[in-house]
Amino acid sequence: MFKGIVIEKDEAGYRAAVNDIDAAQLPEGDVTVAVDYSTLNYKDGLAITGKGPVVRKFPMVPGIDLVGTVEASDSAEWKVGDKVILNGWGVGETHWGGLAQKARLKGEWLVPLPAALSPRQAMAIGTAGYTAMLCVMALERHGVTPAKGEVVVTGAAGGVGSVAVALLAKLGYTVVAVSGRPEEAEYLKGLGAAEVMERAAFAAPGKPLARERWAGGVDVVGSHVLANLCASMKYGGVVAACGLAGGMDLPATVAPFILRGVTLAGIDSVMAPREVRIEAWRRLATDLDLSRLAVMTKEVGLAEAIPLAAQLLEGKVRGRLVVDVNV
Ligand code: NDP
Image 1 (cartoon, rainbow, N blue to C red):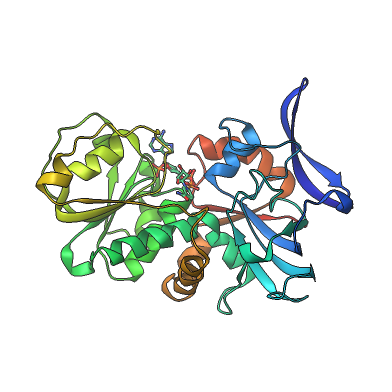
Image 2: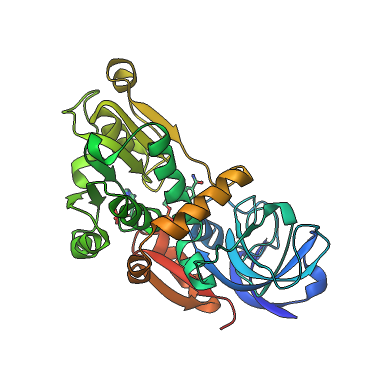
């Protein structure tokens, strides 16, 4: 038996609780992992509260990411004792996930824990941080360098946003953090933001084109915020869009794309190819200031993760929540 969060949906309703789970119930897979840490990402918030259609099968163990030690393996690639990271692949949605003491997974989904990171640091980064790295890599791939000008990060006090601010600052960019929480301005400056702007300046419907300001952007919000970012990119600017914390819609025009050559780079962490993941984790191990990572991280146990899921969706959680599944 092992402990984990279990989500059930039946006549009694949609609910999540910490349960004792029989290891015989673990799903199919060729690698069994003793989980050290998982995390709470936005999608885990949706899964645990039922506020978004994330969970596709019931009962479900949520948790879209985990770090742990291989306990049993029929995969040629992994042996007992290997330290591994899992992000995405539908884990925590269609396949039992990381918010439990054990997980059974496909070996091809796993990446090695970089030697420079402890298991806890890897989950302080988690899917949010790995996605932030994918966003930064997209900006680089499209030619955004620190010399090109300011880069803007929205939802900056959240998980993806905090890691994006810290990464971009360490890489030498001038980072402007956009947040709905002015009280987090000092926190964001501590992560490396040169300036903090109020979300309200971006949240209302805007013009097709605005004053050119940004060389690059990382957006976790969507809707009017993303539309306004696109409208205020410099000529040839690039926005990496990864989130929908403010809405799924995109009320924009094509003007920034056809008149200023702006690029909208879509970011998906769930099905990203393995070589991209390995590169992202390699970069995270070298390009993230671990003292800043520590500042943005709070650790909780499995039971605490359940009420925190609702707070996360309300935008009340700062930075990253690491879940120690063994407390
Ligand atoms: P968090 O909840 O940690 O951060 C989201 C932040 O967005 C909040 O902290 C808040 O920042 C801001 N925000 C919240 N609600 C609103 C709102 N109604 N309008 C505008 N801004 C809002 O979530 P994560 O960082 O884990 O995830 C952020 C987004 O990225 C989510 O939509 C998530 O689904 C997506 N995501 C996508 C991935 C992919 O593969 N494409 C992978 C990982 C995440 P502040 O208070 O500073 O404004």
